Image (tube, rainbow, N blue to C red; front, side, top):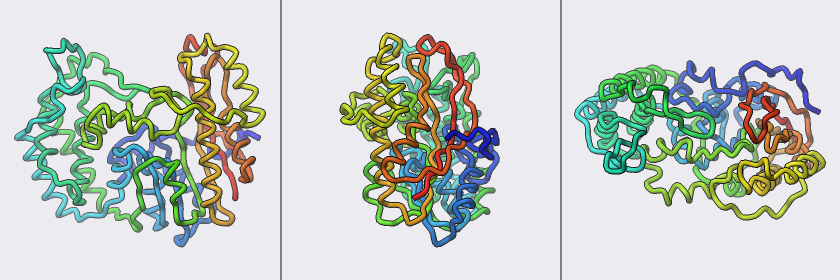
Length: 414
């Protein structure tokens, strides 16, 4: 059932490495994404034309929607994270290079003057001696320079959106911390990196040059990007799709609202811990950061039943007591998504579902096999499960014998 000889195995299609050098894709590196080459392969194999619709219900940074739009194909993307939804929308903006140069010069001037950020002394965004903090995300001069450019932007124009993305990218390049798995981790020797106003301005200018250059590569069709809970938005979809390419959150306890917390606050999409917590409740139940509703279902086929019993019998090896409920809730969410996608799929539609296996209590969870069982049970036809790569995993005291996971694409037909 699992094809280890899949033609895309170890071809770099399941990671975003090549997006660093591709026009528009490179405007903001999203490490959780996959390669446009995977999207192009799915489009070609599914024989998609410009009259068809492509859907990505977990659109992330918009690799699917941008790749399809560049080809002139109508595409729809849903994303719960307002920052990454904004990112996917901005990357598809068409704007004149001449007018963008005027805007970027003005933003650079304002950033050099500087401003006051509402995030100064908030949480760990800057040094706060009164709270006795010994770590902070941004040096004050960096945040001040960011605020100078950001505070003078509009909110809805194409130029302001492009500049906003460049500003957020620049300040994250000058952050004392970096994304590392499920968290932000402070960079080695971060105190001596000495990020300041001038390093920020250098990053910002580089971003503007790249965006201006890439604007010559126009997008042929504007994607339809919607922000919100994918589980609800799929139900409201009015159009039938011919191809769905997507990668839902993995069953890995990663809370992406926490990983992208700096961007959410910096870009103004989230303004309080209460708003952040509310956003977490709109995400798929793949982490334990909030108290979810208990799952109502607990039978997702033989592969699930076998591993779930083993994990439940070894609760002393779990990093959190709610992980068994999280596992059941995750597959319950996925079952609902497969059902809803089936109802919105055109005749002969294809579904490419990129996932990774997981490990808890020293047990390997074959997520791809379980999802294939669920999908076929609700009416999808399984074409194949193609292995994309082997992921090397850090051994932990909870799963000391597992150091490899499998990333694969489940290909289904309606």
